[in-house]
Image (cartoon, rainbow, N blue to C red):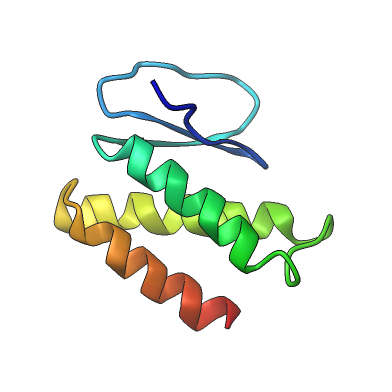
Length: 93
């Protein structure tokens, strides 16, 4: 199984996971955990010139919170990935 994204205060897990912690991390539970992890890793490369030690937590938390909001709004559907990319692009381009 592919390694799922975890770092900078966010943890991506399959929707069936009941993993928690007491560190204040934001969990993203989705049936598209592998795809989302790949997207986050790609965004890390795309925006590497804009992400630094001062704003990396804001960047990743924006991604996690936005995706969780999209799940609440639309359900856990693949189209959320495209919407996430749109939101990230509007904020960081």
